[in-house]
Amino acid sequence: MASSEEDGAVEEKENNNKKKTKSALATAWLTFYNIAMTAGWLVLAIAMMRFYIQKGTHKGLYRSIARTLKFFQTFALVEVGHCAIGIVRTSVIVTGVQVCSRIFMVWFITNGIRQIQNEESVILFLVVWTMTEITRYSYYTFNLLNHLPYFIKWARYNLFIILYPLGVVGELLTIYAALPFVRRSGMYSMRLPNKYNVSFDYYYCLIIVMLSYIPLFPQLYFHMLRQRRKVLHGEVIVEKDD
Ligand SMILES: CCCCCCCCCCCCC/C=C/C(=O)SCCNC(=O)CCNC(=O)[C@H](O)C(C)(C)COP(=O)(O)OP(=O)(O)OC[C@H]1O[C@@H](n2cnc3c(N)ncnc32)[C@H](O)[C@@H]1OP(=O)(O)O
Image (cartoon, rainbow, N blue to C red; front, side):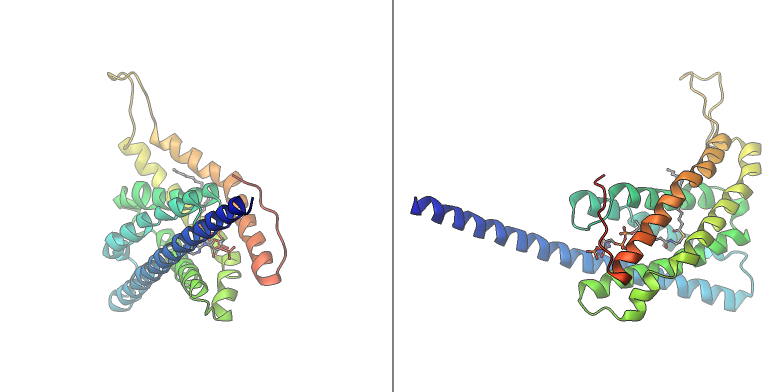
């Protein structure tokens, strides 16, 4: 009897040690990841300001930062992995929708359709994303280091109230501006007849994407409002599992 209790205690100790090593590794990775992402978005912010100060126009700004933007926004796919393996306590679905919609905006709208790259709406969502991400990743970094200044916490859970809807307006206006070019060029579309006997119209796909903001955006926004109540006002919130 005594020996089985001892065995149990040893096993529990080993499990605890494994968990500690795993969480130390996860913390180290997340700290590195968040510092790298904060730096990436800071570089983007500086590049945008420099471009505007030097040229005095937003025309050509997107092309000048396109590479860096594509790199850092695409790299954010790792965050879906963080949720899937459980090293951050966030829903895979919420993070997946957020990251995929951004990647879609970058690769399949702004990067794919040159004619819209100089639209003001592109600058609007770029500025909003940049402000959001500098705040968000620096929040995670300082939080992991247990030295979180209150103004960063405040900014993380207040700025989104304005920035989120503004970002959505910028994105929707950009997709709307893309519609005539997509219709005229037939890009990314497949017309019948073809050897696969499949038809796909990117123009209607974009209209569906725009409509999908109606059910999806409120869910992301209310998720953030719940997070805000939890973090700033200490409310206990019971989250549903994915
Ligand atoms: C294929 C085509 C698809 C098209 C679909 C179209 C439809 C799209 C509709 C939606 C449109 C959205 C458009 C988006 C626009 C913009 O982004 S505008 C800019 C403004 N945006 C924002 O303010 C939102 C920014 N995004 C987020 O905050 C996140 O992405 C989120 C997933 C929405 C919410 O984040 P979440 O992680 O759930 O909340 P937090 O409070 O920040 O964190 C919860 C806990 O997780 C920990 N954590 C998370 N990530 C990390 C990390 N990287 N490192 C360390 N820790 C992390 C965090 O600390 C919290 O932990 P606890 O404190 O222990 O709770």
